[in-house]
Image 1: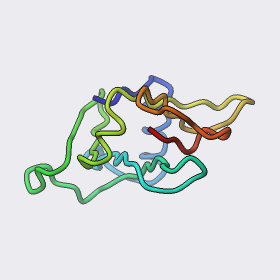
Image 2: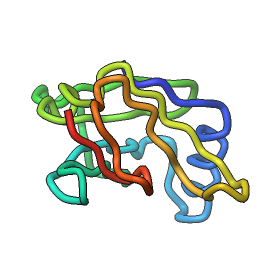
Image 3: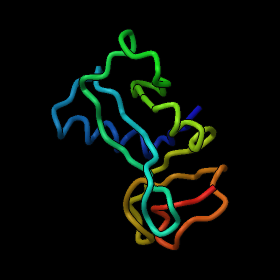
Length: 112
C-alpha cells in the first residue's frame, strides 16, 4: 500500500482542479531509472486508465484519490508515504520510502 498524507491529498486535489480533471482520473505513481542515486519517482494523472481493462496495475483508494502503480514500481514503493510540503526546506511532494537504502541530497532519487 502507498500512504498519502493529508497535506499531499490537499495538494493533489488542488492540482486536479487546476487541470480540470474529474475524480475518475487516477494519480499514477511510478519509479523510473535516473537521478544521481539510480531511481527516481514519477507522479502524473492518468485520465485514461481503466482498471477493468488492465489488471497488470495495482490500484488503491485514499479518500477521494485513486492511485495506480505498475507492478515493477510497486516493488520499490510498498509502504511508502507520499507527503507534500510548502515550507522553506523545499516545496513539493516528498516520498518517505522505507525500501530506499540511500537517497541523494535533494531527495529526488534513491537506490535499494
